[in-house]
Image: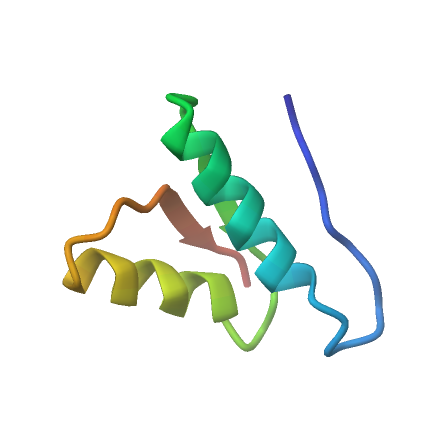
Length: 64
């Protein structure tokens, strides 16, 4: 399954929603790849912090 949160306007919660959905799927045993196409790298930063704190996090890759 592929799920995309996309839009041009910033600050509407796309990264937050994507991270929440990724964690929920991960907790249910799904294999998750979270692709962060946001230039700010919000999801990538979240993944790094989660890993540092020993929290479960999906694989996160950044684009561009």
